[in-house]
Image (cartoon, rainbow, N blue to C red; front, side, top):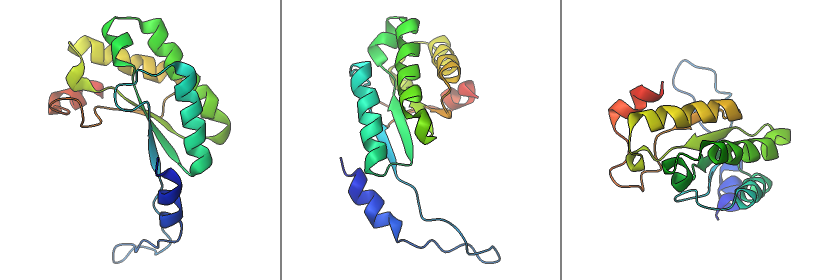
Length: 146
């Protein structure tokens, strides 16, 4: 993982504001991906990886859903996975974003179900795709997730 290098590199980077706006923008933040590429790690491993990424300088976490559990309709296990990571990092107030990898899911209802589970777990937001799984995200999937 290059989280520490990214955090060090960006820490001193000044970002110029567009003309006419105050020039007090903070430096860019580092986001780290947890459970990449298919989220198929043990939940404890994902929680540990999330905490390690924060310790290395990540300010946001993108957590990949366990695709196998979701496709098996094991929603209690998916929720437990989300909850474990969100709970593990909650003392740091680091936002947890859930990635669904929608191109690998088999129905619109599964996308909706996964979004609801993420909301129940306290995720900051839900994202469509890492871009690795097949075709990536489709516009209709993004609209469905709203």
